[in-house]
Length: 55
Image (cartoon, rainbow, N blue to C red):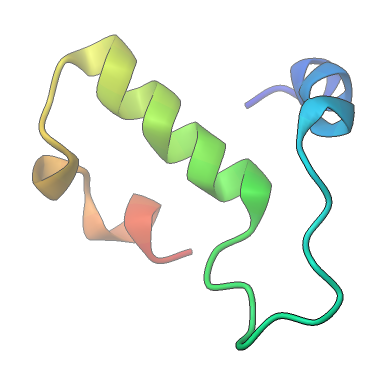
C-alpha cells in the first residue's frame, strides 16, 4: 500500500486498546493490505500467500 494512501486511512482506524489481553497479532497496515489483496484479486483468504498473511 502506498504511503500516501496509508496516511489518509490510518486516522480513520480506531486506536488499539492500551489494556488488551494480548499483543496485537498483525500490524493494521499489513492487515489492510491483505484485505485489499483478497478483495481486488477475488481469491479466498486461505489462498492469500503465507508471506502476506504472516508479516
